[in-house]
Length: 485
Image (cartoon, rainbow, N blue to C red; front, top):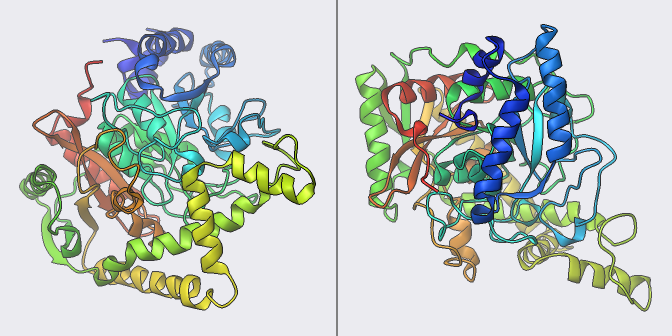
């Protein structure tokens, strides 16, 4: 097996035993990128020179006995996180030439752990999308079927993982943007509790929903990544001042004796039958391990799409007001005056989906409509969170599909925004409630497309997600399969 195909924990053991070097691992990853990237387009930019320097520094650190679990591990980063001295575009023309003067907190933490940052991955512009077709720098293809989407908005990170172009990756999840592409690309993706991981240095989309999390090859790697990412950050006012546990102690534990809830609102008509069958297979597998299941109700689930597509665009409208062509980013040439420069810079710099959401959000926040839309949506959001609180009184976790269908064909939903939005219908409520959720591979369609299952838990109960994910992995081989590119 090639080095780029191994997990973090497998490579950690090889590095500790002197069986390989961080430089050799990085070179293996870049060889893989050179071989397949032209087919997939998972990256917007690569950091080959600095990555090889970081790998050499990691080897010195290992030799000095100062290594962590991530020392020398090549990691890809969604291009929505600030990286000092390297472009951060958010998949948008308006930030095409933006080079941040600082690192996001999560980037600084990865570097402190000795990780090797290999590049910035492609994404839907400003994380507004579900297919990674709406990047100003071209679409990303699903490694399992190059005519299909990888999911979004973190599709570049998920595709890079599935194609073994990195060992782990970072994404962001505002309405499912880690879990949905993880499911469609056959890898593990975890959205942490809101406030567990610092958002400092994350280019904002919807500030009350955005969360940073890991993509990994299995639950143990996910735990290693979360150890590096989690923790209080005084630079982020929404960061929770609490000590995070050592997440490595959860994979490998037993889930026997647990009760897992099956929300009846998530198992409805319209779900692809192969996805239903795969999720039912997960339930049967876990029942054999001693997990009990019970039906629960989350009655306000039916409002999640409407609530999300008021709150998220409203916050986006506010956050994206800063892109005016004055201080940084794209500026339209040949404008007649200042107002014209503002208008033209935003008209030319933003893509169609970003403009659509800015207009929806601006309308929702406008005088006379705020109470009817944003305020009302926020009130319903509170009720949705109460539904989850009630369900967790009798359950250790919840199980649901991640997506209603497998990966769809490129271009299939580009002209139908509502159908595109509905591809996130099973992931939105987790963000609205601030809960943690994980997508774990659980099967494949008859045509070979990956299927994921979603587990959700109480706030700051990521340990339970890692426990049940690893229990499933021990019984199934799904997370070990990779596409034949």
